[in-house]
Image 1 (tube, rainbow, N blue to C red):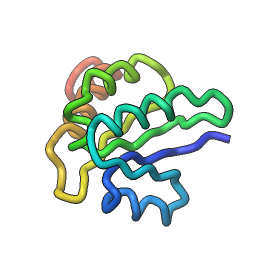
Image 2 (image 1 turned 180 degrees about the horizontal axis):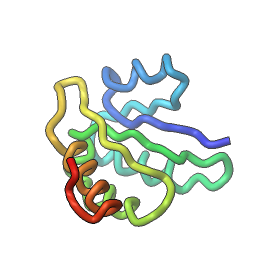
Image 3 (image 1 turned 60 degrees about the vertical axis):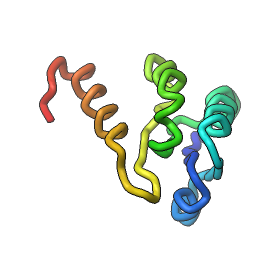
Image 4 (image 1 turned 45 degrees about the vertical axis):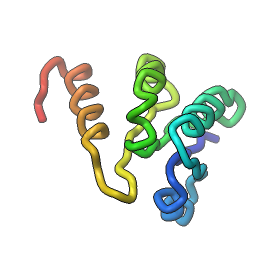
Length: 105
């Protein structure tokens, strides 16, 4: 069975737990980096989607981009408790351009 994870601040991930997603509260970007790598390496019963809070992803974008070349896991950036900072939208535009060949958004 495939799983979905959420990595973010404690206030941000609590709502996702009610949806049945595996939630991992972290306090800083380095903890987020370690958790991302840990979850991405699971081979048995893998995580196919990992939601990552934008403000934690910003300092580790090089690490996040490494996973974009792989089919799984898909790393989806989501806004945190303080609202969006634009990284998630930029990633979506980039993915659409890659898939379609131009920015249709």
